[in-house]
Amino acid sequence: MIEEEQKATAKIIFEQYGAGEFAIVTGAKNLKYLKDGGLIFEIGRNKKSVKWVETKLNGNDLYDVRFFNRKGEVLTEVKDIFNDQLKDIFQQNTYLYVSLLPKEYETKINYNI
View 1 (cartoon, rainbow, N blue to C red):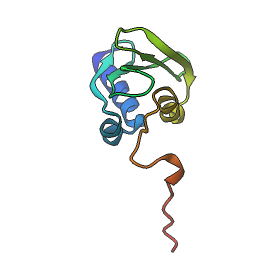
View 2: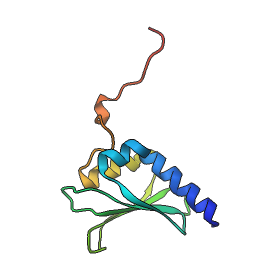
View 3: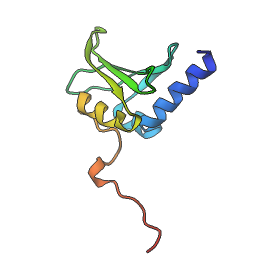
């Protein structure tokens, strides 16, 4: 994988998490792309003591997500995740919301008013 592809993959993953809103709400920082196709970032304080989250694209075109503590030990690893499951997996493993409003408050705009 060339560097531009690595950066593009990391950017797509970040956007699937929620991009800027996600970073603000979760305290995500120190975002880095991975050479084998993924993204790793640090998050703010949470009840599960997760410090780093690594999300990699695997050979099945799905994601593998690992949650690390401060010592770099893997707390949880979840494999073969679809992109629309990333936010839920993150919330389950950190107890942090990924957006300003919880999912149950999200609504779709109907333009046929």
